Image 1 (spheres, rainbow, N blue to C red):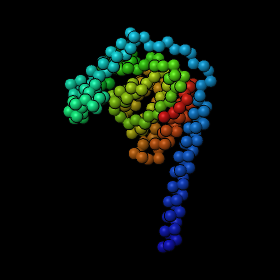
Image 2 (image 1 turned 45 degrees about the horizontal axis):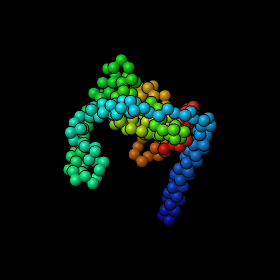
Image 3 (image 1 turned 60 degrees about the vertical axis):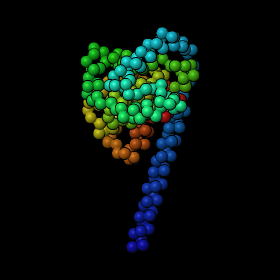
Image 4 (image 1 turned 120 degrees about the horizontal axis):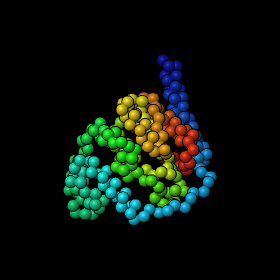
Amino acid sequence: MPVRIHFRRNLFSFRHIEKWIFTFYIFIKIGFTFYSSIPTDETEILEPYSFEEFKQLKKRISIALDILPSIRENVSCPILFDPEDQRYPEAAAKASKWHFESSDWNFWRQFEATPNTCEALQQTFSFFTKPLSQEEAEYPLAYGMLVYKDIKQLLYVLSAFYQPQNAYCIAIDGRSSGAFKTQLQTIQTCFPNIHVFVTKRIEYCGPRIPEAVLTCVDKLNERKHSWRYFQ
């Protein structure tokens, strides 16, 4: 019996050390990838957004919000961004009860029904067509995402921080539906800086999550799209 207990402790310690070694390897790998992905060419001087361009962006954001049923009646953004407003507690309570009820199928079908799905996505959501500043243009970022379902949520999140100089990697859980995988493949064809691949089945907090992250870094590094920092 003492020998068996001693063996289990050693096995536990070995597994614990093995996880740390694997995690350390990932950080080292990301570090080398980070340095190898720094662009060496100079970034061209950008022409800032004009007033008319910003008006068009604001209009597109308004269109994207209109897709969400009853959001304007239930979510008051000006009040929620000002906690000192006396109406804030009531507005926060009302907003917390709002939820999006439309199905993924109905949401995506409106884009498939158009002659040009890519143009419809770009016009509906606020996907920027050029960097917002010279500083952002000279410091492109790389983003990694692990997704399983809900194409509408993904589009709203992605369009919130999308810029064309950045690089995006989307890892799709192997358990995802065929329709969801097809939808993401469509998004990849619309945006050259968005890269999509399917992973193995992912379990919550499982060991395949860091593997998916590392694969994202490798795939981004294989592309000719320069970036300076991965997150």
